[in-house]
Image 1: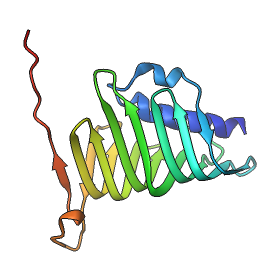
Image 2 (image 1 turned 45 degrees about the vertical axis):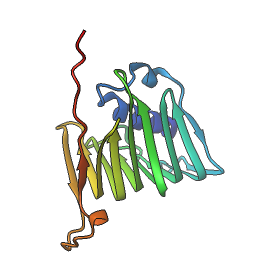
Image 3 (image 1 turned 30 degrees about the vertical axis):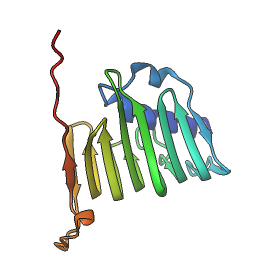
Length: 172
C-alpha cells in the first residue's frame, strides 16, 4: 500500500514539477484522496478508486469518476488513468491564474513523462485555451500535440481550436 501511495504522490508531483509556473509549495503538501470506493491490490501493484473521486494536494484539485493506478511493482513506471464526464485537473500558477485540463480520459505516464487528454480534451491557462479530441503533452521535451477528428469532419467541435489571449505589458 505504501508503494501505491508513493506512486500517486510521485505521479502528481511529476506533473506539477514540470510546470515551472505552478505553485512550488504544492509538492510539499499532503495528498488527500476521497472516493466512494477503493480497491488496492498490493501483490499486483494497482489501486482503483471509484465514485466521486477527488484528489487534493495544495492548490491541485483533480476530479474523476474513476482513478486507476498501476506501477508494475517498479518505481518510475507509474501510470495513472482518470476517467469521468469529464475528469478534471486544476492548479494555481505562481505568477497569476490557474492551469486547467479536462477530458473524458486523462492518462499520466511517469516513465515517458507524458500526459494524454482523450475525448473532448481541453487545456486552459488563464484565458488561453486548446480544445480538441486528443491532446498529448511530452513534459521532457515540452511538446504539445493536439488532434481533432481524423476523418476530416468540418464540425468545429471535432477540430483543434486554439485561443491565445494577447499579452499585456504592465507599464509603471
